[in-house]
Length: 344
Ligand SMILES: Nc1nc2c(ncn2[C@@H]2O[C@H](COP(=O)(O)OP(=O)(O)OP(=O)(O)O)[C@@H](O)[C@H]2O)c(=O)[nH]1
View 1 (spheres, rainbow, N blue to C red):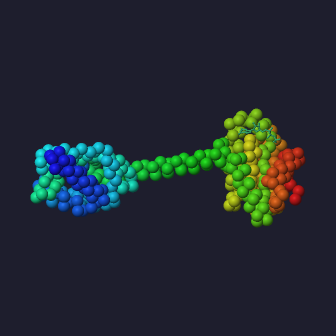
View 2 (view 1 turned 90 degrees about the horizontal axis):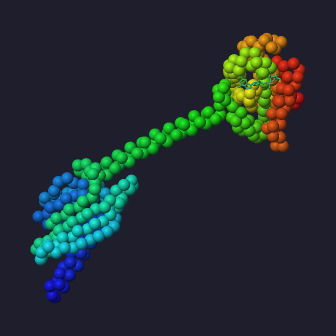
View 3 (view 1 turned 30 degrees about the horizontal axis):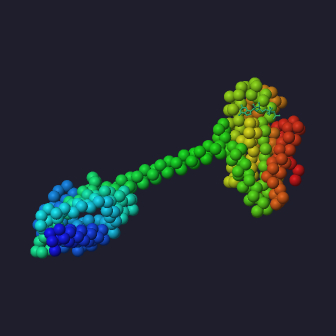
């Protein structure tokens, strides 16, 4: 074998030793430590001191394997072998290191590794290992900065959770706002339509009656004209509160239907029970005694139309609405400030 062939053979031998070393390193194989010379020195990726003996390096290697026990993936980017002398060869490698950690942050760090091989007792040993990975966060006892990264990750998770909670609360508020009448604070028409449909379908299934009261303030235009729109607003607010006070059974709903018109939805209520509720409301509004100089009673009053229906499969919610509306129209025509019942 000539000198050149000998050199090539030596380089091939080192290359295969290096490949074997990388394979053992990535498969977390402890036999790797047998490759180190007793005169070893080295730098770890995150370490801030020079390791000066083999036993210390073996300890660090075990820490490394314990910290990340799963197989690593090494993606070699560049590699060079350099003969320094007859018995010394330097291998410099440049690769991506992918750690099997869930947060993935360490998954594609670029590492620079320098291994110095030297012949000792007719065998190649590693006398120096210097690995440089930009791990800035390593704590003592760590080879990889996993603790810092996990902390960063859990801080991030806490932040995401807090943001999600804020978003849910904001959505809830939004939902509440979109179902509430801005002036009176009670349910709005949108909310009523939704609940009405649900109760209608429930009544269809159960065969129980569903009742509706439609209420309209009497001569409210005259009220506004005389006392002003702001007093008119106050009046509507007070009336809404009376309704809320008088309609309290669970499942019952009071809503502003629009303008000076309100609705009361009474599940499981026949015409007789609904009429009682309507009269109770009428009395409570009378007791409130909001002055209204342009009506015969001199106080604000409602006209109320009451209807109840046990819906069959062919009927639609509008059937109940128009019955209550017709009764209200009747109440207006018969002089206002009265309760009228829709015929059964
Ligand atoms: N202040 C105030 N007025 C409102 C509001 N919404 C509707 N109105 C008023 O309610 C009045 C309703 O008038 P009309 O529909 O003519 O009915 P009315 O005067 O109550 O007469 P009848 O219903 O026939 O007894 C109008 O003057 C509207 O401006 C509101 O949010 N605030």
